[in-house]
Image (tube, rainbow, N blue to C red; front, side, top):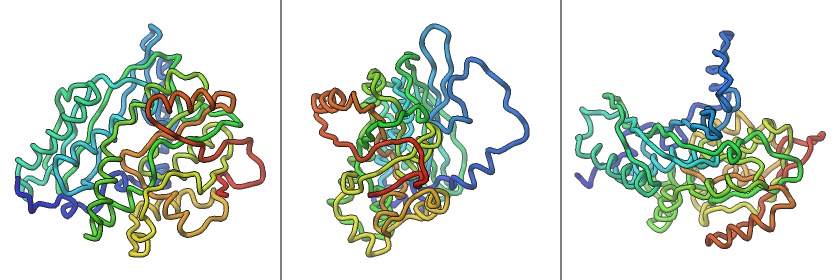
Amino acid sequence: MDQTIKLTQYSHGSGCGCKISPAVLDKILHSPIPAIPNKKLLVGNDKRDDAAVLDLGNGTALISTTDFFMPIVDDAYDFGRIASANAISDVYAMGGKPVLAIAILGWPIDKLPPEVAQKVLEGSRAICAEAGITLAGGHSIDCPEPVFGLAVNGMVNIRHLKQNSTATAGCRLYLTKALGVGILSTAQKKGVLLPEDAAIALKSMTTLNKLGEVFGQMADVKAMTDVTGFGLFGHLSEMCEGSGLSAVIEYDKVPVIPSLNGYLEQKCYPGGTGRNWNSYGHKIGPITEEQKYILADPQTSGGLLVAVAKEGVATFEATLKGLGHNLAPIGWLKNPDNDALITVI
């Protein structure tokens, strides 16, 4: 592969920052034509959850999801890895186990050679293998900008199914990956990202959210979602509204990638941050500019946002520690009052 090719220069957006804004998406999805009812559909589009879930009638359910985007890194192999980890994450966010994937490829065949797309697929296969699934096929089109992702199926015991709308008051909130990937990705697109920070971002985005399958088996995990293009504010807002609750975030407890402030000083924040803020900002209490740029930062292959019942916190943290993870709560959920939907302290 020609090492001078930089994939991020062939797209106007990057990663989950390419998402259509939540406000515009609401308009697209709103239709006077009712959906065909399906009693076996446990989770559908009306839930604003991470995936669709269909009851198979034997105590198990099928999880179905898709995710794709434009390059967030220059290297084709790593682009395939990141896009695949991001797509598979939706299954883990439902407490499920991925079982099968097919590829979605849009490629500017007059601009980029097929060998580059081949590397994207090789990266995808590597992550699929790590998840224990097969990349079994897919579909491709000639496209003005490179696009890649997966459609993924998973399975879950219905008793272990997790949703983003089932949290309860008093739940403690945990985040399994540090925020800031959108800022670092923008710095890369501007050519100012330091190699050590590029390595941090790559490791984060290619780490599978396998913990979600473990959390699915824990009764005290009341709700779960992954934090991607709508940022922490957006995905937490969906959890709060779906559960009829509000949230308090302790900013100094939120895991954040080091060195972000230097990039913010260089105005390395993605366009998705502004779109997120325009969609969710009116639901947030008073915050600083720094807090806005970090908590609304669109994540690609971001971590899991987990709501754990207060009485289950000790067991939850002990389980995590046994798996090599040390996490502390970043906030909690409460019954709504006259405060903002999300308060940052």
